[in-house]
Structures are given as structure tokens and as C-alpha cells.
Image (tube, rainbow, N blue to C red; front, side, top):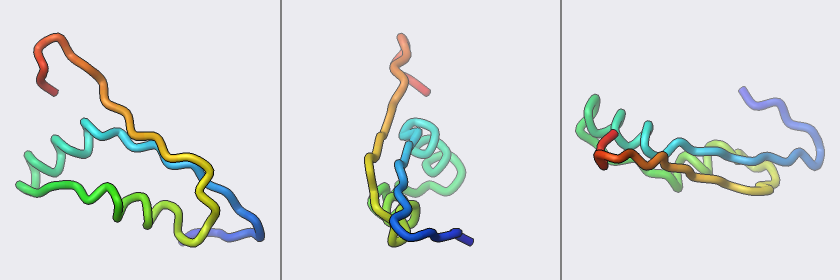
Length: 61
């Protein structure tokens, strides 16, 4: 349930690497980041959306 207030604003932070590997390893699926963003905003005012990835020396998770 989302509590709404007039003029409510939201920022979305997405851990791309975590979601990608979880979806791939657990469900053999791909992540729809657009759907995540839409669900997170839920008719509120989007201020900023960040998607971040941590680089590793091995290039793996």
C-alpha cells in the first residue's frame, strides 16, 4: 500500500547488478526496469531515478 499526500515526490534507486543476477539465477528471466520504475513511482512525481552497478575486478557478480 502506498500512502499518498498531495504533491508527493519520489526518487528511485535500483541495484541493477543484484536484480539482474537474482532474476537470472532464480527465475531464468530478465528484469523489466521500466516496470519497476512505473510501479515505484505509482502516480507520484518522479524527482530522480538512479540505477547503479558495482564493478568487480573479475567482471562477475
